[in-house]
Length: 389
Image (cartoon, rainbow, N blue to C red; front, side, top):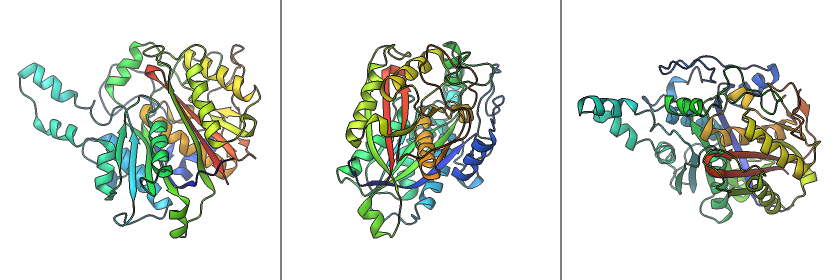
């Protein structure tokens, strides 16, 4: 095992499964699936979504729902890390997203097309919707700020980028994760692809019929060990390795042999200096689509063996796109810290073409290392390896 010296000193999440880690773990334990019809925009589509029903008032940023979700998760993570005034610290911000409050400008384009004129309030909102820059301004973080837009691996890639900043001394602390809102454009897009489930998703199940979209934000506070020590902050959860690849096989489908995902996982294991047999569980991307789960399941079986403990948490949150990597990394860290992972909700029947099978009940975890994976359109793959010291 290689000690990277990068600790996780704070976690913050908001999704349909709850606001905050404690509420989310309660939902996991009670097997709550808070899905229903979309209510935040008009659509004729009736498929269930995992919508955040209430964002606390203090985090509402006008119509910028992605910024509101991000700010809520950041605030919780900073409090968890006992961080207040950031002005005298070297703090970077790296956030992944796909919608980023920019696709919610449909009213601008509709008005311009229909009348030749459009409200400039929307253009102003667009210019202020860079998530990382917004969070940096709001928290007065003065280090590097980067918004990562890399489809559904955006959140994991953002954490990986921030991890590299800390290892290379660009900053001492990083606010890193992902945020995304539900929006009409991706809902119509995924529906057009024929991969949206009209019921509730069932990742890795034999009879899976597609994904449900969701929204939320997941944020980790990454901190160099010497910085945490100087603040008298203790954490035994750390980032051990990160791997990314792009197989460029297809615009929307993963490469059938999973070579890109496998390369990402092997790179993360190599950076951490640990063997596949030392991984205690994998929080898989697990969307509930036919192709993703088949490819990902085969890769996990090939690397870790068919008995690896694994799950998908998308049965609780839906697929939150750019937020997924942030949320699932936070859930992975919480699993290591708490010593248990929830049932992979929605799964009932093993698919004989997939060698691994997700856990069907709350499961105790004894190991020290865990992996979170993300697959994305364009052939992007990312893997983040977390450890407990």
